[in-house]
Amino acid sequence: MIKRLIGLLALLGVLMSILPLHQAAAARGTPGSSEFGYGAHLDLKGQYVPDGIQLANNLQVDWVAVDISWQSIQPSRENQVDWSRLDSVFALLEHYKITVMASVTQPPGWAVSKTGPDSDLAAKLVLQLVQHYPASISAVELFPAANTRSGWGARPDPVAYMALWKKVNQVLADSRSPVLLVAAGLVPQVNPSPDQLDDLEFLQGLYKAGARNLVQVFSLQMQNVTGEPATNPTQDEHRVLRHYEEIRQIMIQNQHDTGLLWITQLTAPLANDAASDFQARAQNQAAWLAQAFQQLRSQLYIGVAFLNRLNPSSDQSGTTSGTPLITLTGDLHPAFRVLRDQIAQNSSGGMDPRPGRPKTESLVKGH
Image 1: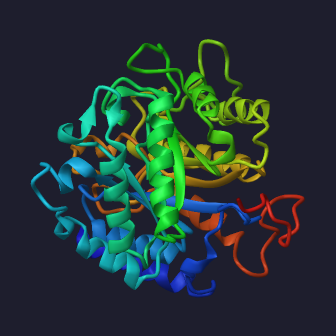
Image 2: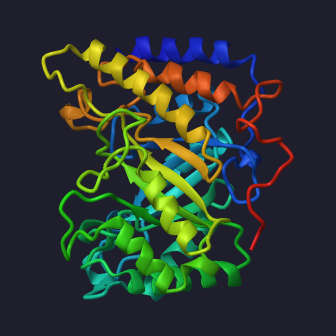
């Protein structure tokens, strides 16, 4: 199994050698860039982590996202941050010059009050993180799924979130850090409640708290997406890909037309036919992703889209859930070819980075 995977990665490396070398400085999808960026998540607790990093390098993804569990690296107030859990992974990411978005997740109970994570403690952690891995981290997604109790660590509160975001942003600015701070990680809800706020309502609350003049990038997580990529959202169902249009409408209503949206979790839905075999489901997922990436790329306000996983989780259900490019059997998911072909459009001599947009045109002005 492992030998087969290594062989596949080696072959992929040969095939990709005709493209330019991976450059971390490209930073596609950031404010001021006219180019669309492709990313993928690396599951630090999953299987084949080094192989996932090598695959990211061979595919020349613009970004790799990693979840940094605050609870895992600093379980108590008395403990210093345990970087040993992350050092080997970031050393390999730095070796390949891969640009990283770190998603800070799971605030520990000792750092959370009834209104959410302590802003001073969170700012201290983020500053330590970006200073410890300065060569790799170019963006930080701050407590994604903030409109849910599981993401925020307390009852979601857009005013409290924005206060924390402002504190972290100020600390990074004071330290002259160039890291981009990505906000919210919005998750569409089926049955909103006080513990699971509607993401559109939460976003509106962020604007009321002053997001327009500060936040350059909001993020949206589409892990439980349903329907075809072109399916329209309805009043009762917002978990479709084109939910990004509803997010954009809120941004425009708040005169934030220069703001960007990143899709930081993109998972192809499973086939409705549960009896279909794995290969058929995988092919259907790959076809869905091909259409989804083309659709996202055409939206000039969407900067980056991240496939949900490079490597499989340690949970055996990883063979059927999500879209890991490396499967539990050590094979490559058909979606890998989709991502490879999409990324090739960003290579020199390829098509324009966005349909109808010249490469020299900037998307937004820097703040």
